[in-house]
Length: 249
Image (cartoon, rainbow, N blue to C red; front, side):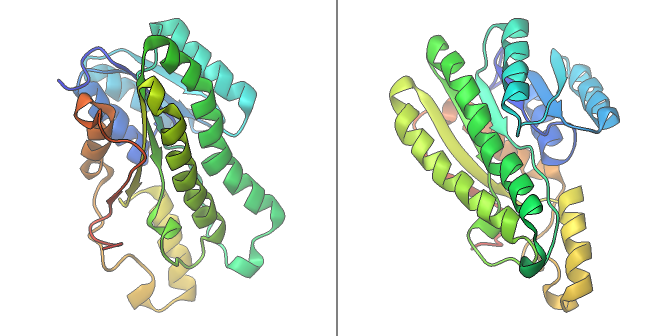
């Protein structure tokens, strides 16, 4: 198993891609902490599924946009297992809206989760990873960070910032044996469902969905996260991997 006895923290791990990644980590031998904000039922279900995979699990309700909650989250993981080998910054929200209709509150809230949340989580785990001699950080971006995408200007801006922050963090942290990489996945989730529903209201059917890409279940993109989290990626840092069925090819 490629993550035998490792400890992983997956934000937004209660459903969608985060849940699939957490389960994949558990099957590869990791103990896993998962976070969610408001859906306690989904968080509890994911917790049970990870436990059924035979690994220890810790479910934490936390808002990654709030520094105090992030620090509490990291503290809880360290108190439980004494280390954090892998951090996956997956927590996210999406509120499809035409660019001219995005208000300042929505703009700030979207960036708070997707960009500030990544910053806060990395800043909180770096001292832990430095003390233990290294670690892996995997951030989540999106195709909209690299190409035009109707209805998600705030989301795309935040995800573009995640790419820039990933590369900067990788440069600063490589001396401490901490690899920081980024994955741009596309899979069928509640977020894509919301985006497609919005686009069908405003765009022709031929461009309302990701017609160029094969939309897969979240489990299909999880192996890329396992790769970046394990020793196979020890010599890789500061990179962006598209796992999108060719959408950005």
